[in-house]
Structure formats: C-alpha cells, structure tokens
Length: 495
Image (cartoon, rainbow, N blue to C red; front, side, top):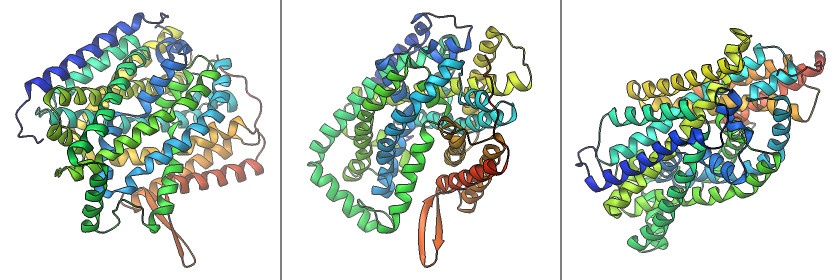
C-alpha cells in the first residue's frame, strides 16, 4: 500500500468504529474504580488498586507498543535474525521483575512514592540527584512517545490517508481522556487493545503461511533473499554478531523497567503478589512478539517491496487480507499506540510534578495542585511529541529513542542496587550517573547513533551494546566513589 492508494471505505469504517469505541471507554474510565482524581496517586497511579488481570493488560499494553508491531517485523525484514534480539530481551526481563520489583513496590507503597525519583529522594534526600533521575526519565520517554505516533502514522497512511490531520485528531482525543481519567483510561483500553492484537497476530501467523505455501517456503524465501543481499543479514546470526546480539538483549532488559511508563504500571499494582504473578504470566507476550517478528519473513516471501521498512506490516496485510480485516488490524495497531502513549505521558508528568516542579519551584504544593500540574504537563508532553513528528524527520525520534535507552540505563544503580545495599551514597551515584550519560552519549555519537561499539582487547574484538558499556563504567565509578566518601545517612521519606 502506498500514499497513492485510494481510501478503502470498508477498512476505514472498521478503523473508525473501533477508534470511537476506545474513545468512549477512555472517557468512561474516570468512573471506573472510583477515586479522587484530584489526588496524584489516584490520577497518576490509579489509586494503586489494579489486580493481576488489569496489571497484566496494563504492563503488556505499555511494554508491547504500536512501534513494536511496526518496527520489529521491519527490522527482521531488513536484517533477518539480528532483528529477533527483542525475544531474549523480553525473556530475561521477567525474572528481573519477579526478583526486584515487588521489593521496590513495598518501599514505594509504605512511603507514598509515586515515581522512581521519589524513591531515590526517600533513600538519599536532597533534590538535585532525584531531579537528575527524573530528568533522565522524562528525556528518555519523549522520543518513545513520538515513536508511538510514528506507528499510528504508518497504519493511517496504509489506509490511504496522508497528512497529519488524522494524527492530530487522534492525539487530541487521547490527550483529553488522559487528562480526564488518568491511568484508568489506558488500563481500561488495554483490555481491548491486547485482545485485538492477539486476534490480528494469530490470524496472520495462521493464514499468511497458508497463502504462501507454508512456513518451509517462508523461511526458504527469506534465506534466499538474504543470501542474495549479502552483508551481515541472514536468517541465522553471524558469529561476529553474537556479543552484540547478547549485550543488546541484556542491556535492553535491564533498562526496560527503569522507564517511567513501566515503573508507573508496576507501582499501580495492588500488591507485591500482583507484581510477581505478572512476572510469571507476562512471558505470554514474548510468544506474541516472536510471532509478530515472523511477519518480516512473511513479507519477504509475499514479495512485499517498500521504500520504507516501516510500511512492511500494513503493506503485507493490505496485500493478503480482505478490507474489513485490514481496518481491524490498523485499528489494533493504532490503539496499541494510544495505550503506551497515555501511560508514558502520565509517567513523565508524575516525574516533572513530584521531582522537578515541587522541590525546585513550588515546595508547598497541595495534593490537588500536584494533580492539576501533572494533568497539564501530560498534555504538554503529548503536544511536544506531536510537534516532533509533524515538523522533524522520523529518524530523529528513532535516534533519540536509541539514546534514551542508553540514558535510562544509567539510573539502574540508584534504583536497583539501593534496594540491596546501604554502601552507596549520593556522591557515588551522581558521579556514576554522569559518567554513564557522558560516555554513552559520546560513544553513540561516535558510532553515528548506532547501538553497538566494538571493544578491542589484544587481537580480539567484541561488539557490545553501548548502554551496557556505559552502565559498567557507571557502576565502577559509583562503587569506587562510595567507598572513599562518607556513608549515606538515613533519610526520612517525604510524605
């Protein structure tokens, strides 16, 4: 499907119908699990009352996004096996969540922490290091929100509609119901989103191979394509890619739940048991992700030829499925942008309000003033992401999202290590964070904003994920400085 294709009325009707459904749900969500939405913990964390099922959909909704559905098959279509790094990454992350996040939840619940930076403040005091943690989260999240817009833009274009107006309308609606309902809106919509995505993916992996002569033919066609293409592509990893693949998976896993949106979903859970149960059941999404990735190989076998790899999934569906299903699939992917974009904007707004505006500008804010500020900031964040996509090349958002992953990884010691040791102090963590940010940014820029840097040791060379290299330097500096400077004092948490 291209920009020149006419609008398909059946597909567009189905798309609009489902979009209207989730819009109504978004506004009705303010009445669901009633609470005082003039309090930040109610608006921004849903009152910390989401049980196992709601949390499962919510975490899945903000972890597996529209950009995932578009970008993972696009990467597999472009480079083959290397694009599957997201699978081991999502396998590694859930044991980490099981072990670490219930412990963090207990501290956050006991001391009324709403953000990761609240937790850092509660443990170390001060305002500048928590502000640095908050700023890292906000800056890392902004391009992530922009990429959800990219995913929505791709599917709308696939329906034959060009221009930014549909995107603007969609995100004005999103902004309004997020403002009104807070975290309850994406939590409710996530039910519909995930069920639709499961239907789309299961139908695709069942029916598309039947149309193409079976999976054997799909893999054979992909193998022949990559052999002809040459280079580092292929349906199997090259030996030179092993360390890059493994370190990218590990680094991404460690970073995943440092982001404000995933942290918000965890802290909105009703209990640590809820978090543990979700860590057990969430790998079902990893199976889904593997199936989504296979769409890249199916597109090769189907003879899909696109100027931009991002158009692979809409083009594949438009070629092989009836119009009504094309509209349904487009709606599923578009809604997969709304859920994480809402949670991301709420997470960023919570950080700004609690850890930048309140301590640095207005320390005597009341509860309703906090909530009001966060609501306004959530609007500003979404508007900023929209301007980014409308006026700047998409590649900028992709590049910044890569840097965002490197940056967010640098708050890992402050959050995770602090749960297990009292040997660290503010000076060590602050300097470690700074070294990690500067080194990671410098290496990424030196590599032309590619995620991998080759480390040379003697005659051996090891391509490694830049975020992990920066984190290693961060950890060394953190522990060395913490050893040679005074131990931290016990801090009373802020209410």
